[in-house]
Length: 527
Image (cartoon, rainbow, N blue to C red; front, side, top):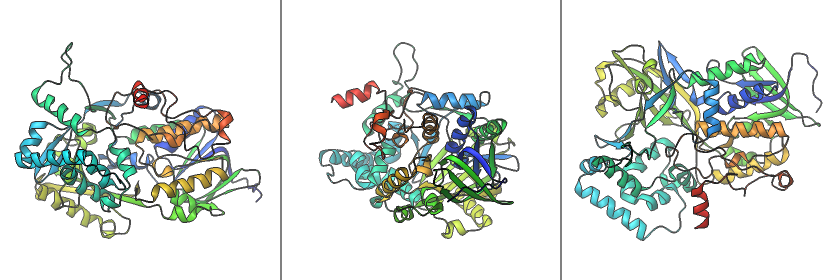
């Protein structure tokens, strides 16, 4: 095809699909380096994707809860650069609600023993022992992997109900690969021994009397929510003369004979056309495949990728505060809610009235199912009733509410997703070396906010060098439990690929994760 010369077209170096953490990180860094950039974002008002902050009558709330913690020093430095003066330090507190009782997390041994009772605790440990002596050698599913790690009894109490609420499918149909990635490094033995030390007050360093932090106990957070970060990033991009087009949905993406891209987007004033040398996409892989012209060979695999949608019902309750937790996981099949956030515990500035608490009930669903299709009034009433059932507040104390719908919040990790992603990735990367997929939905990977940012940061370096210097697909590939360790402890979390190997490694699948190994990695490999 020939590139049109319509003067209304926008010609830039890089076009970016999506103004979430990955898309805006790429736009910010490219703008800083002097590239011309245009970002399209389908939301008409908010940037940040699922990391945005929504405001309703002065109340602010986060969509999902986003702590600002990363082991990557590069990510921490970028956060500080974009938002230097608005972070606050917050205590981390979360609990599990099970059978009317609360379980602290991290585990407190005596509390868990008391809540479960001696008989059930004994059964849990016997079940754990059985799994270790007679493990399942043919691990295929989330259930197989988790039972091997913790025993069937603990799996059924603390994993099965909540996981099936989140994903809308039986645990024995979910990928073991996802369980290994998400729960990796969380050891039952370490959790029990650490909890015992906490309960006895023995978890102290001998020299200074300070508690050893084995799991994240505090985190930084923008005082008005994560949306502050992405609003600031957008402002920086625009200050450099580049654009973030709100309310613009990807319509079509095509290349000409020279490899240049023509991207069309449907916006509030009609169609916008952007021509660019490179395209960075954080759009869901399934959606991207349907917009590329001609349709990719991997279209059948792309159509088999699935997504879980998400509802936040924020309610205002007459109370100074309902509970001290940042969030509570609800392991209770009497209610549909999966998690409850307390926004004042994230930041006091998000709740303007000292006499009103604002909490967010999170519901996981599929787009257009009964829950998704319910009216806002029905959903607020459901939240009101379920808070009463759980005993978290009285139904009559609820004085208001609002609903936020988030489509394609979580890529689904069924037993075929890994092969489908690999097929689509190989197809698109081999045909389109200047098309870069980043972020959670853009790569169909369970990336946290910092991982999504790192995929964008490395992609910018690849564009700048004109090579596939970094393997972005290995970001978060062998990550340890994401709440363990020290902030900024690692300098690099993906391996650099030498130029003489790039051509032979189009899919770049067999590359180790980091160019610099930690001593723990070296010890593990030596063993």
